[in-house]
Image (cartoon, rainbow, N blue to C red; front, top):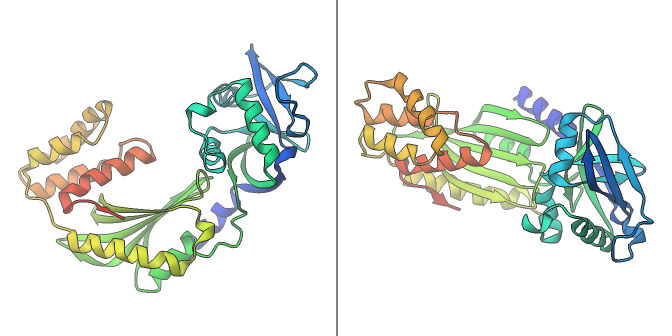
Length: 329
């Protein structure tokens, strides 16, 4: 419990929030990148005239590390706040979509996109920029509507609620922008232990994700997902009933599949990409002979080389069909 609390506190200190007046956030639009030198065209929301013009300042930035140049080539812009350079991670597009309704297509790099963004900045009073430090550079990963400093119903509070009811922390991990904790609930069914997985994300739409999971040895299967957006606008009292409904529905619906080992492997393979199918087959080889359906199910659910976070959730939700299906919350 103490390690979990320490980790949660550390996670909340790993990034920084800065309240900014949006019309004072200049956009540095990438003009060109030549031999490691980046030329940036400064667009100030305060000085907008409605079209690009030569009087605006052009900045020349050299000696940037390779990762920073790649970031600028992908996003096509950076920010200048209080005379300092803030690089922009492409994760920021998720919160720009939330703030302004941008689609990914609308955010394709161009001078016109950046003038449009500057106009949107000019029309907004203030926001909270979330950034981390990489090497000596500030890297923006989100722009939030709210400070999120006085949240009622964050990951730790939800976890603590279930710990007080007899649950235990099974595992947790985190990085600069995400935290995940697995809460082992005090019940099991058909030899599988029920867990509540809680994910917190600093980027995108300030979301919390609650996942009903079933664990057996190293095997993990998801059978229900509940997403809570704008967690600053909710409370613990509002969150708990929905989470309870999710885990209770998944418990009632849980039933181990009657498929054969071969059928389990074939269906599990359909939940991973083409490149991962061979990796899954090789992983399964250590479990042969595969003459027991339960052993086959534990094997496919123990596979961890699926891919990124989204692919991981898709795969484990797919496996949920082996345990009675997925509850849509």
